[in-house]
Length: 113
Image: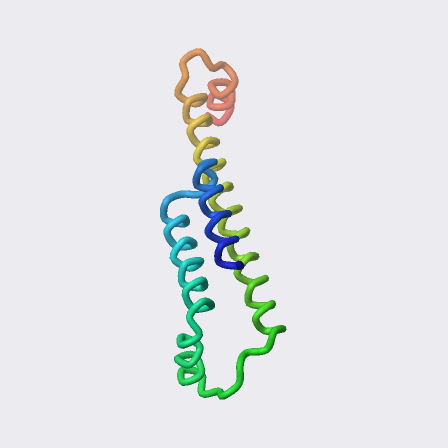
């Protein structure tokens, strides 16, 4: 269920153009991997061998992991949003700076000289 939530949220944000293709691919693969591992119990035995434990990970640890993944997903979304805003701001600033009809930035340029 958690992996389906990540995948659906990822698809929604891609449809709304809130994340880029690189982030979409990363989070889609992560959601798919979590879903496959949780649906096929044989993968857990590989985790037992890898971590050297014999007991299933506690529910508290799993819940903390899910919250951590969601927080990282949200922060990645916000970084992409800020990057888009920065690109728009840079484009607007350069358009204002090199626009011959703009008197505001020309006045500032003359004051600096």
